[in-house]
Image (cartoon, rainbow, N blue to C red; front, side):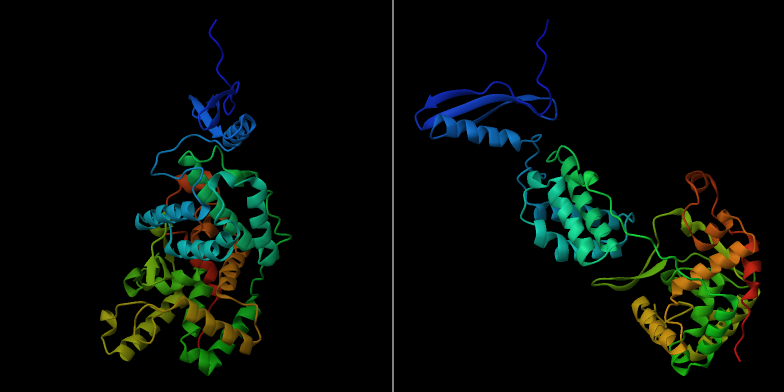
Length: 392
C-alpha cells in the first residue's frame, strides 16, 4: 500500500546534521500546491537550526514566480501592483478613474501608514481587522468599507500570485454601520416652494441652477448624468433623452465623461411635456448667448460659462449655498432623485419601471439579465407631468 502524502501545510520529521559552520536542520514540507519539497535552515547550534527551520515552516506558503508578489513582499509594494492592475481595468473601461482616486487617497492616508511595511505573510485577520476598525472609529463606516475593499483587493491579488493561501479579509468581522437614516423626499408643496425660491434667487439664476434643478426633478438622473447630457442626446420632437454617461473630474485631466460599465447606457428616458418646453426655451436662450442658430447649438445642455463641461463639484458648492439661503439645508440633488422615485411609486408604477427611470442596473438578477433597456414606459413621464412649475 502506497504511503499517504503529508497533509497540506504540514512537515515531516526534522533531521539535524552537524556541518562545518554549525548545524543544519532539514525536513520535508507539503506546500499548498500539493508538491512536497525539502526545506532546510542553518544555525550555530542544533537547537538554533531547528528553531530557525520551524519559523520558516510557520511562515511558508506556496512558492511564487520571481516576478510576482512573494510572501516576503512588503504590503506597500503589493499595493502598487494592485493599483497597476486597477489602472489596466480603467483603461479597458471596466472601472472608473474616480474609484482609483478614492482608493489611492485612502491607501496613502490610512492604510500604508498602518501596515505599509508589513510583509504579505504577516497580513493576518487580527492585524487587518484593526486597520478597518480604526478607519470606522476615526472616520466613518463608509471610509471603513473603502479601506476593507482596498485590503481585500491587495490580499486577493496576493492569493492569485500564490503569496497567501487565502484572503484574510474575508474573516474580518462585518462592519456595523448602525441604523441607517432614511433620506427625505420633497413633498409636492416643498418642491413647488423650493423651485419658486430658486427662480427668485439672483445668485442661483446667475449660476444657472433653476433649469438644472428642474431637470433633476423631472428625470431623477444622478448629478453627473445631468451634466453630461448634450443637445444631440435629446429628441425634443419625440420627447426623449439618451443616457449620456456621467461627468467626472479625473486627476490631471480635468472634466471628462465616464460611460459606465453596465447596460444602463442603452436606455433612453421619456420626458414630460413641461420639461420639453423648458428645454426648447433654454435652447433658444443659449443659442443667443453663444451666437449660433438654435438648431445648430451643440455641447452640453447645462454648460459652464464657456460652453464646456460643467464642474460637478463647483455646481454642488453653488447648490449648497443656495439651499442654505432658501431654508432647505437638507436638500441635495439626490433628494430630487428620491422625490422622483416617491412620485412614481405613488403613481402606481412597478419597481421595474421605477428602476428603469432611475437607471438602476437591476431590481433582481433575473430582470437585470433578461429585460431590455430601451425607451422606458411612458408612465414615468406622465406621472412627472405634475412637476409643472413655470417661471414667474
